[in-house]
Length: 261
Image 1: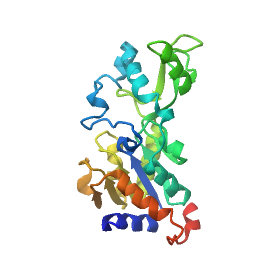
Image 2: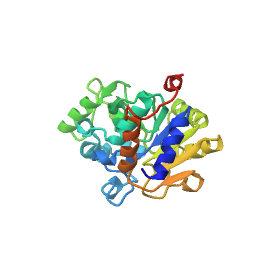
Image 3: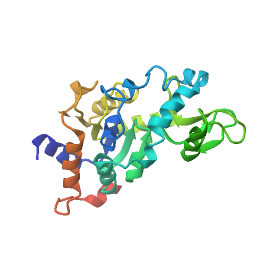
């Protein structure tokens, strides 16, 4: 095994509070495009409009064309080895909190339970007029029939529970994310450019609090200069290596029971 990967394995094994931050790069191996790569979502959709809350209220048809093609196919997509790795690390007592910028729900589908969705998710939406919760399956059905999703009760515009640009992040989620970043003794960043804030600050918060910081990404990130270890490699290779180690019955996992405290 690559010595750089083995170093991360040992850090995780010795940790008492592993916290992981994931970005769009985690889901590309499942067939979901990231945002900023040359063939990413922003190469096909106007980044200034697609998640712009003001434009959504002005003309929701653009977002719903995007959602129909890109978002509401997530239910047919399966988690990949990185999602499964993180679920395994949680089940083994290593992973204390997963903080994600992703909205696709694949971490939950893989089995992760301790999770903070910083940017919301597409599992449901709410009517902007009466506040009724609308599950994703109903939104998907609505936009198969009409250009936008509207409430069955009042006819109001339905918006998925995704945080758009121009909207405030959920305060409790952010407080929880900063709490776990400070608490971490190992902070692992997977598939995030760290260009979107305040999520991009979290590795710095963890590092200042004494955590070992490792970043895995094939591209430069905004926090590479403070990382203890930057691994420039395909995320799939990294995750497959760790999954092989932590799923092996021969790997010595000392004091495993204490990790659940």
